[in-house]
Length: 213
Image (cartoon, rainbow, N blue to C red; front, side, top):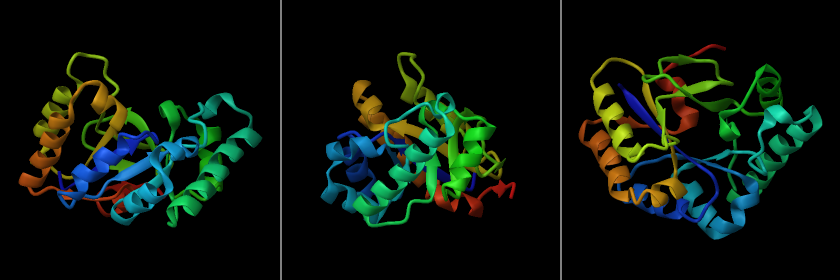
């Protein structure tokens, strides 16, 4: 693999610990945040995160967009984008579907709302090409098995040196905390660093994979 994109979902207090761990290693990530949770992060903290990382939208209320009418979807998309841009002081051009739920209707509305890229949770291993409005990922930490971060580490180790493409990881600070897996999270990051994998922001994926424009 030529590059890796770390994506962190949900506006919870644990994102601050993720930010600090990555900042100490000079690694940038993309934080997909739901606007309703910004108080848990804090405006000053959010601006600090935005200086080192990319801020992406995860809607206002972390809603399953496939279950909403068009007008409600547009509210979730545009209001979250506006709130994040105002709070963080940066442009927000990347989006992540809550629960990974999307369809053609939702994809079209995401694009119409001004987002350039949208991430799913569809696991494909090495990411080599993608629809910009439905970018798949390598692996998520959603697994309910006893050691989801051990599984993620094994997948990452198996892909390094396996050819072209990107490693795209989906992580949640609150899940890392739930599994007491901070050491394993850092192990994955350090493994990628030691193997000279280039870290990119989600918005930079076009530099590593083919997008179907």
